[in-house]
Structures are given as structure tokens and as C-alpha cells.
Length: 226
Image 1 (cartoon, one colour):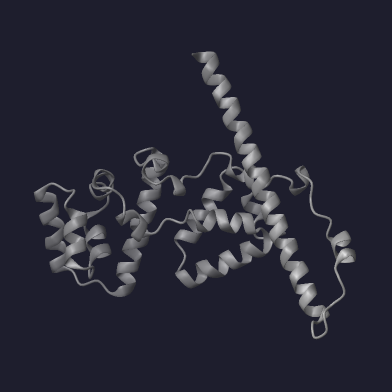
Image 2: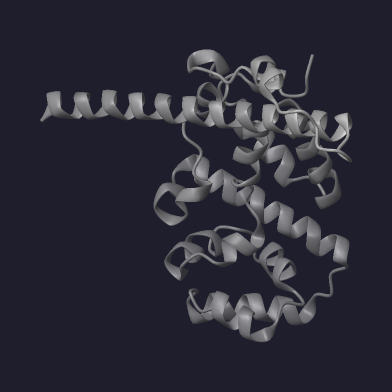
């Protein structure tokens, strides 16, 4: 059984995404490498949707206030501890003065270790994921690239043979003889690379076709209601 098999059911993508987000950077890259070996499409979809604290900090103040006002003050203070003063000032500018003062006072009083700061950042990201699940934060409006479609597992698991595929065996037969100095190993590596790339492109095409079909169905339903 491959690593991805247990996550291919509905909701599995989100579970795997949370696992990656709460893993240390080195471990996360190790996981992503394993995933890429099984499915480049899954790896790409996961990588571009991983929530980071830098990404959260880039959001508009009207959304940050929804987050900062809900997380534990000490968690927020420790997560921001050591950040450039101008960044802290800008980020906390979305809060009411009394709330902002409370956070800055906690930052002045606390002295978290790097591990404690990292833990608080992870806790904040988990909280943000919770707010997303509750509908408090709507990624499709705030940061569409991070939005996870409801049927993403189905989109990623589509049969790669739904569209015509390139016949690699025929391609090998049609390849011109090697130029002097080139090796069979190089050609073999190139063919393997092209195979992986073609399979990835086929998966992406199928995913887009399915998404287009879903959108058409939704549009038809909306027209019926209207």
C-alpha cells in the first residue's frame, strides 16, 4: 500500500495537508518527496496549498483581525516574538488599541525559546485551519490559491487513461540513432522523464475536464432555480 492510498477518500487531502503543515520543514519535504514519487499531481496540489505563517501575515487586516481576536493572546505574542518591530506594528494595527497593547505587553514580558515560538506558530496555523473549516475565514475570497475544492480527491484520482496518451514504446522505435558520444543511459533517463511529465500533464487535463463538468452542472442548477 502506498502512502497516498489512505488519503484518497473524501477528506483525505485535507488530513494530509494538515499533517504536512504541522510537520517540521525537513520532515515535510521528506513527505512531499515520497508523495511526488507516487503522484506528482498530488504533490503539486498539496505543496501550493500548504498554509504558512508568512502567508497568513500577508492577508488584509480585515481578515487578520478575525484571526488575532480569536487565538490565545500569549500564543499570538510568542508567535510574533522576535519579528521586526515594523512588521509587528503593521500586523497588530488591525486590532483595537486595548487588544494591541495587551499583545505588545505580553511580547515584552515573554522570552520564548525558538522551539516555543515554533510551537505557537503551529498552534496558530491549526487555529486558522479551524476557522477555515468553520467558515470564519473563506479562502476562496481571501487567498484563492489556498482554497481546497470539495471534490479535490476525485479530481486528483481521475483515471489517467481518460484521454489519449502518448505511446512511449512507439516513440522509442522512432528515435533516431544516437549521435556519437551519447549514451543509452542518457536516452533512457530522458524517456523516463518524459513519461513522468506526460502522466502529470494527462492527470492535470483530466482534473480540469472534471472541474469544468462540475461547474457546468452547478451553473445548470442555478439556471433552474433562477
